[in-house]
Image (cartoon, rainbow, N blue to C red):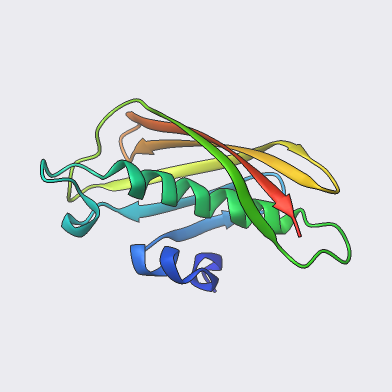
Length: 127
């Protein structure tokens, strides 16, 4: 099962998680026209939502015993390049810190041919 399917918005966007563990989460998304700006490039909000989904999957994988879930409480994105409609975008999220109350994840997003699109750092609160 695709872990992103448990998150309705991520499923709607077409996020596919290809690898998921407490050490790293990898995924991909096809840049469709409905995820783009008027200029035919992936919308910044779609990029951020993609990264958020990957980081959330990792945060869930690190939840301490008895935790009910996780939620994003902070996210920062540096946009580095464009992702035009019709290409596959890949992401890799790794933990910078995990703990009892929160975890911090860094996600690098790039085109399938390795061109950087964005770097996202998010903080997940343990519920």
